[in-house]
Image (cartoon, rainbow, N blue to C red):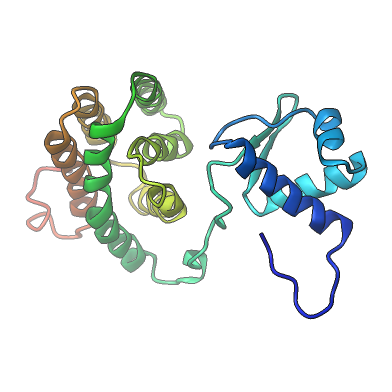
Length: 238
């Protein structure tokens, strides 16, 4: 919750923001959990519905909540983290950015996959399988697969069981976007094959295989950025 400087009293909306965050904590609501409808939540918090609506708008802008039109309000998977917390959009050298982001991912994501293999539930694996298939279908049909690719890696982060891993997702999401933009999405077959390898290792609860599969997935990506076919090993593009 936010700290207010000096003697300034928080506005009704700011107080409602704090009340909603306390509600999420007290109720133990997790990523993707749905909040009560507007009428019920307004009554529980003791605030007017117009104030509640404005508060939800502000918390949505802060990536604490997510509003799905016609469905309801949910706890955001983004954990209140800004979409571009490190200012990648301001970096002009996109080629350098793509390479450095992949180096960061190589440091983090193989371990994340290994932890997912140790901790994923049957429900987690079913969701991961679904997302993997969605990426495959989009690639085969020639449609943009960025968002679903990001969701696949988001699911792995949640499956890891580490509460810090999901907070790194804006960086990972940004890295996936920068890579696809830099390469034109050329690694279609490799993406499908290595995603499936990661999924199968997690399904078997084999952390070593999951780490290796994720490492291979990222090495394919890194090598695709090399301008020299010899440095690429001559095997990733024809």
